[in-house]
Image 1 (cartoon, rainbow, N blue to C red):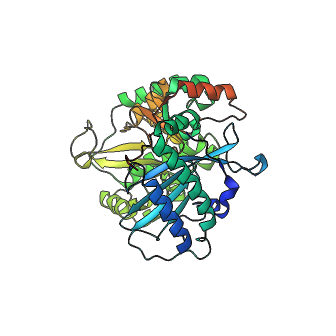
Image 2: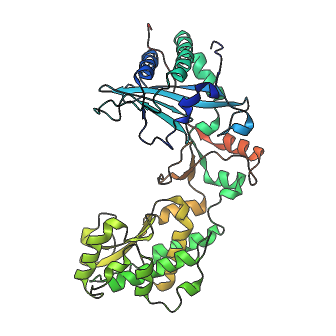
Image 3: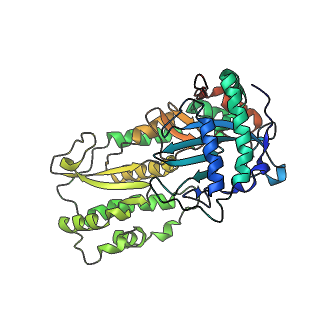
Length: 410
């Protein structure tokens, strides 16, 4: 690949300040800037399409500011790496300039597809920065059209691993960086999960507010008093009834006033009117306690009579794993068997038989039977050394990078 001068991050000036933190819906550029943006898009169209909306992208290096003025980590050469993406759909043109992690600039020809073009008079005048970017992109695309393999090889060799996606065995991650270990006592977790799975399901032919509130209180109390970071004193719950705790801490607990706690009809009324407001959550929007009648349950088959009710405890966000284990233990102690589809996920985490995803932008909700959760690549700090980061990189199965290809005869 031809030696192309590296742009300085500061050369892009006001363009790089238009990040999504302050412009969630992007920035509609002015006419002069749009003209340059469209020329960059046309230049990128010399490359093969790489996604929806005729999308193309390239990784570029930017010389980072001095260490005292850096907003993010630079590579060993003192450079930032940014992805420049161009795309269009039915006359709507957009360009995204992203560090592949948490920082990106979103430039647009209009507010949305089919929307009226109303340039941002305060921030849309970025043509000077775009002209500098255009010169760089043009030289880069020229080089790729001459020899794409050299560009792809260069990116494969030099792109920081913090910008890449891969998976690592949890056992390897925990061995290399014990700070990532989920549970202090994994064997205890295994015992709790197995006990939960063997406990007969609680069921009843009627669901009432009193019944739901009682189980909810068991879970909420252990959630708060065994919190790893800011546990509540047990005195907060001592000598308080289930109803008092529920009305104080449930998002819609006060809505039970005037309802018959022993009426199934009133339970259904409360659930129907408040379920959209997280009333079935133990940890708000994170851990959920649902009551189901078997005939209305769409999950796996459960061993209760068709006209009976049972409880389901569920969660998705990995960071609440310890909380759910504490809840399952409390339910076991109370003899309340529940459906917990995530118990197998907890077991895989405790036994270290699954993988951890490593990605620039981890999704806290993402998991499957193979990958239990996602993290960013570990970085050097008080608990992790340079050697440990290198070992994690070596132990990770990295996805091949998407290759850039020139359209023939361009």
